[in-house]
Image 1 (spheres, rainbow, N blue to C red):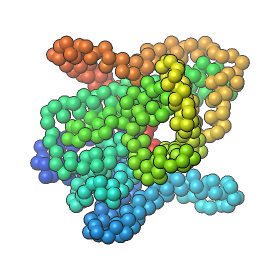
Image 2 (cartoon, rainbow, N blue to C red; image 1 turned 120 degrees about the horizontal axis):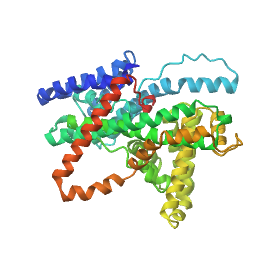
Image 3 (cartoon, one colour; image 1 turned 180 degrees about the vertical axis):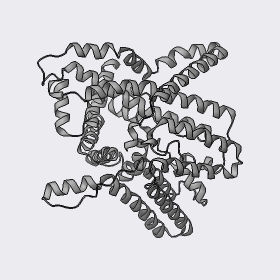
Image 4 (cartoon, helix red, strand yellow; image 1 turned 90 degrees about the horizontal axis):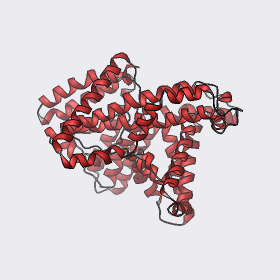
Length: 468
């Protein structure tokens, strides 16, 4: 699909920026709105209607809540109706087939399944739009009376289809009026290039290795090959998703917006709780604000807190996809976080930091097996391969070939997932701003040039999180 190609983005972006910078402030949001709709419609020429209906529902709900400002009961029903309509689209398109298939399997019925295609990014823009009506009901924000401004907020094309999830409160002031300085544009370009490099040079490269290993027969796969494969996916999903987030944040800055951070070196975490404070930060924050805290959060009995966490992580798993492996993935991480909260977290603090990191990283890697394998049979077979239960040999010549031919990208991925580079370049930044900025500019130019070369020879560059 052309929509998932970075080459389309590079053809689309210069045109938008040209019109955007040349236009007065009063029509900049109109340009954002139109560009967002066109950007989405390129890949979803029919389902763009679903997104626009979502926009209209939440905009009307906001205006009605403003009209009945002193009638709290009416405001509540308007908000609930808006949320219900938003969720109905999400359930219909994302979970409809899953629900029908499980009902048919459980009760032996033959309910017709239309197998509706999943609209790109529906989970992201639905959560984003819902945050507006919920926060407006809670009086955390003011009503947006301009339909153009509100539509521009929901359809901000940099993060429209794969996050970060930007709440209306994050950019409430900037959506109405904002300043675009040369420094913001320069910073945005720098962040965008960093994200582009993550995606094209790292995620795509290490992902090719995982694609090769994933296609093998798990029943005869040596343990070393299985570990090489899942470690490759571990880095691929990080650089793919964080790369897109950086590109979106960078483009946002170029347009005058400050989007929230979505990743903070998650593979440096020393517990699973810490990992989820560093990974997909905007999703965790969304569930905390709109599900966990309203349910009671940490208040109440231990059993109540455990139940709250279980519900949040069950929903987190389902948010990622209508499949039992995602349910299992959510319960897996939720269970570990519950155990850490009850007693394990305190015990972890008493052991060496390196052991804490190994504990966290291994559990995350195991979690990615649950995430990537779509059936319980595949999950069981791949875990068996990892622990040498399917094959009498732990490794083969091919295992070492796969490592040796990809060792450089593994090393770069490992270093890049830490703060090591920042640690070693910081003294230079303080010592000589000129040298630091010059080297930084040269590196960014080289990364951009190499990425363009890759893109010229590869017309299909899908992001993994487009599927959600």
